[in-house]
Every structure is written in C-alpha cells, then in structure tokens.
Amino acid sequence: MKRKSLLLLFVFGALFFTASWRFIPQSRSENDRVPIRLNDGWEVASLSEVGIDPGKIEQITQEVRDNERFDGIHSMLIIKDGKLVHEAYFWGHQRNSLHVLASITKSITSTLIGIAIDKGFIKSVDESVLSLLPQYAKIIKDPKKRDITLRHLLTMSSGLEWIEWGSSYNDEHNSEFQMVDSEDWIEYVLRKPLKAKPGSQFLYNTGGVHLLSAVIKSTTGLKANQFAEKYLFEPLGIYAYQWNTDSTGNPCTGGTDGGVGLRTRDIAKFGWLFLHNGKWKGTQVISEGWIKLATQTHFKIPDRRDHYGFCWWPGSMRREGKDIDYIASFGYGGQTLYLIPEKDLIIVFTCALTSRNTYVFVPVRKTFDTIFR
Image 1 (tube, rainbow, N blue to C red):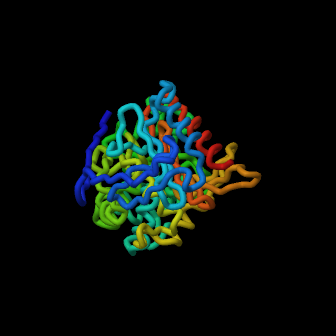
Image 2 (spheres, rainbow, N blue to C red; image 1 turned 180 degrees about the vertical axis):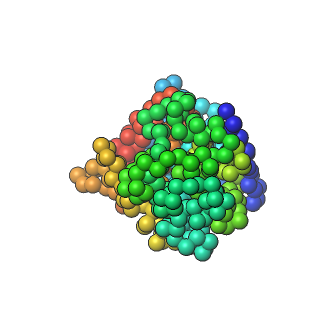
Image 3 (cartoon, one colour; image 1 turned 90 degrees about the vertical axis):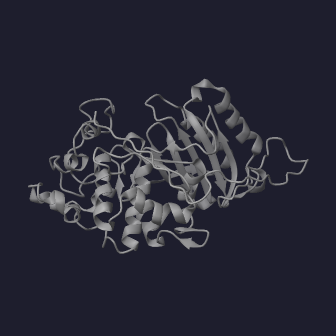
C-alpha cells in the first residue's frame, strides 16, 4: 500500500496556552463546573448559565468515562450562546491532543474552495475541473469529463464510477482502497469511467473531494494545508494541526487516512463560522454568501432521509414539538460536528479512527435529549 503520512505542525505562538480558572462560587453544584479559560478566544460559562442541566450532562460524561463500550470516544465539547460550557476528554486523550477528523475534512476542504472563490483565485463553483488541472487534462481522453465542475465534486455528483459506501475500506474492490494503492491518486480518480451525467445523481466519492487538493494547488500556488494556514487557521487562532498526504504529497482533502487532525476546541472554532455568518472575533474569514450556499440542500439522498450540501449534511430533527434545523459533518469512526443555528449550539465528539462501533450515537442522542427538553 503506497500510503504516505506527513505530520504538519503549524505554530503561530506558544503551543501550550496559559490557563486561568474563572472564579466559581462555593454554592455552585460540583457538576456545574466552568471550563478552563485559555487565551484561545473562547469565552467560558457554566452549563446552568446557558440553561442546560449540569447533572444530566455530567451523567453522560461519566458514562462515557466508565463504560468500556465507549472506549473509542476521545472527547466531547458543547458551545452554547457563544460560550464554551462543557468539555471532557477520555481514555488518555487531553485538551492538546490532535484528533483526526476523517470526512469532516471534506467540510474544511469545501470551505477552502469558498475562500479561494472569495479571494478571486477561482471564478466560481461552475468551473470545469479539468480546465483547472491542465497537467491532467492532456491525459484524460473522454471529452464528457470536461463537464465535471467543482460543484459536482462538492456535491458528490461527478458521475464517475466509484465504490465506497457499503464497502469495507479494507476491501480491495473499494475505490478509495484502490486510489490509495495507486502511484498518482489524482490521475486514478480522473481515469475512472463516467457512469452518469455530471450533476444528475449523488454517489459518495472521497476521491472526488481529493481532486480539490490539486485544484487548490493549481489555482492558488499553495498546497491545501498552506492555503488553510493562511486563510482559515491563522484567522481562527488555530496553532497546531496535522494533515496526511497522498503518494505525491497532496494533502488528503477528502479525509483519507484521517485527513486533518485538530484540537477539539479548534474544531468548534471552525463550526462557529457557520453559525455566525463566517466571522470569528470580528474577522470575516469566509463570506456569508458561501455559508448559505454550502449548507443548503443540493441533493436529497435516495432511500435515505439525508440531504447533502457542499460537503455538509443539512437536516432537521423533531424536538420540542417542532422541526429544528441543523448543519452537520461526520467522519469515519464516529467523528461528529453538529451546528444548531436556532439554539446557537455546537456539539463536538471525536473518536478513534476505527471500523469498530464506538457507539458515539448514544451520548450524542442523550446530549440532545438533555438540551432539548
């Protein structure tokens, strides 16, 4: 297997933050703790201050900590009303641990494309992929593939033949497995046969999102990780990350082999942008227009209740007697990022990168049951 991983640590300042405890009145319940305030941009508050039952959240946290069924869960974090109100780390993981995000990386990649459009490096999502990759256009003979656009890659509708969903990632017939085993991942994806008209149907395709790694390099002159450092991570005050690369050094923008690794607090910063019109601490990181475009439904998934945007899963849940909209991103192994605009709520869970069931859906559901009374 021709896999190549590269640990990239990006440091703008000290890796270890100076911590200070907020004053906690003696009368406060032992379960109603305030997270540590760091110089990382997050305001902190107790769960009770934002109307969440601290006792129930502590029960969920303790269950994850004590039950070996949940030993694949690494961290849990809640942001409510703009404040960090709960964070917990499990099974040896700590606040400074980097957690690989798998397919949540796709949502980050989508955001990088939006920033590239905002900055004028790319005209629009309707540009032909091959027109942006002239070095590969010469070897791709099927003229119909020139109709594949960035929009199609972002919505999993390129029309390229791809076997991934429902297939083990250790199965030699799995297209991502074959991509990883190839000399040139970009060429492998582009050479796949065209089986449907681009834009006509949804087919989950990590390889298509990996093509965006080459697109970012071709259009901006920067590798995806370098572009992210300058235009996404630095404005958010993200101090460290890791990002796996393919056989030729392209960052794995589709999340292959884990994709991006971030601290849990920094994952929440990324999510914050999509609840606050693309701004962090007064800085416009991504345009409000892109936020709306990326998180709206572009495809309804056949035989499922899911919707798909630009590498996001918009949807709704029935709570409090009504449908409450959410924006979500998920990754292999149980990586979970939920954004609830109506509640100004962010929920993050990180997990081991494993095919073994981490049962993360259990504490996720219980957390929602606690918050939505």
